[in-house]
Image (cartoon, rainbow, N blue to C red; front, side, top):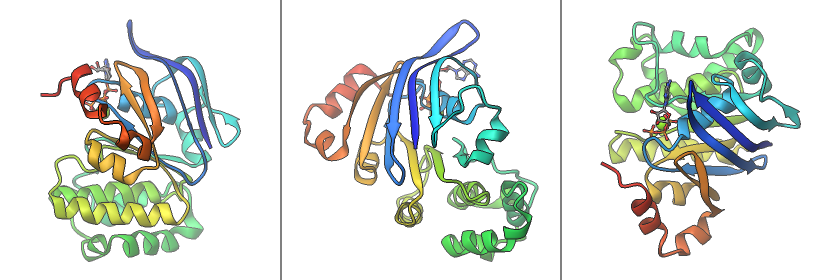
Length: 236
Ligand SMILES: Nc1ncnc2c1ncn2[C@@H]1O[C@H](COP(=O)(O)OP(=O)(O)OP(=O)(O)O)[C@@H](O)[C@H]1O
Ligand SMILES: [Mg+2]
């Protein structure tokens, strides 16, 4: 469903991705691990077309998208739940969701129902300004907004960051439902335990390069994984 081959990306003169190759099949849940500044969000930005890859190829569902404009990539079925949620604070929950729907007029009420069934908390807060929601509710809204356009590949950038264990659990079970429905998920996560428990395969990105990739079952068996991860990139 998604194949990145030798993707290089930079901000000005600073190269951030140094030839990254990643593959994922339809319906798979893959984790992208790595410390702060490794290039995880940049990789997602390259997939969604919000930054231009300098070289390499990104194929989604059989079509080359490395030069496609961002709105075409959304139309093709790729959606990002961005780091830090980025909901539109003054707008209501309902309006934030509507903004996620793009041009899906006919299906709009069906999509609202779908999101409200997944996150009943949002249904209770339809008219509430997004900026007054709790962190966990804002994360639910960010995921719900991305689901409004019926994506086939969902990219999640640190969806659990800063959330209490109970909310992490609620969002995890929502993501498990999405996975069970066949949605393909690429999840950026810094916490090894969450990522390894949730995904079937994982890539470890350090300084813009994939240093390790394997099934999560095999990664868990590598006793040195946590050491490698920590020694290569001490976190603050
Ligand atoms: N807009 C930008 N302009 C210039 N440099 C940037 C920009 N965005 C990110 N960078 C740099 O690119 C590198 C990778 O950043 P990126 O945000 O992709 O890392 P990350 O793995 O997502 O980190 P974190 O876990 O902290 O979110 C960092 O060195 C960062 O400073
Ligand atoms: Mg990031």
